[in-house]
Image 1 (cartoon, rainbow, N blue to C red):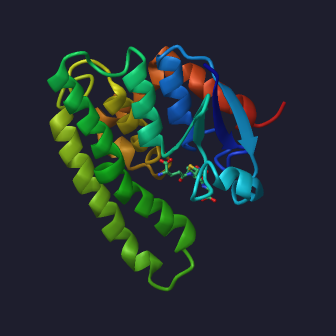
Image 2: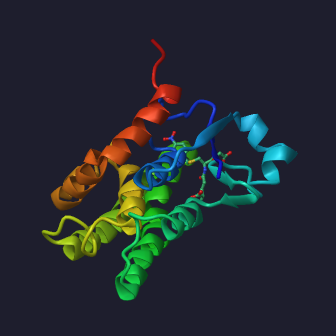
Length: 214
Ligand code: GTB
């Protein structure tokens, strides 16, 4: 089995690991699977060869022999389903872990992405400053709920799972804004995820591509 993913030729984040290939790299590292990376430029992402893999012209994609996938939730789920270490064996615990994966991308990530949009895409609009507190309050509301559910636990539902991998990856995007640090339990949860050896290997691999060149 040969696995190839795509990633930015050079991520705009300069190696912070915030582009979405990092979560796929992390899942592959947790599963102990070797993989190759095809780096693509912004221009190449919009060309037919890449569009045949990713209809929306984005990274990451995932190729495994004849199978081609896009969407990180689906890719991480595929890896978790076929390989050990990311989903519990017990059927109910597995269903709950998958629920957390969906919660990460469907319920927690959207308000965080809205902040990114507000800061980058809409910053020159006359209403941008007025809207910002609303955007931030929506995030704080969600973070309060998530923090209350996590409580003093290390992970969202028993042991580390693909649900945590997705949630930590989503929360990482919040760190540059300073909002993550307003929620000490969530900041510690993210730090626990980052401390995992598999995350460290994934981060180092993307850093080798995107970090400042020596
Ligand atoms: N829902 C899809 C998934 O989860 O796979 C979203 C994929 C996606 O948004 N891909 C982005 C992309 O290819 C890269 S990760 N964008 C190119 C385009 O739209 O033309 C998003 C991202 C980009 C940059 C930073 N950064 O610089 O910090 C962080 C995250």
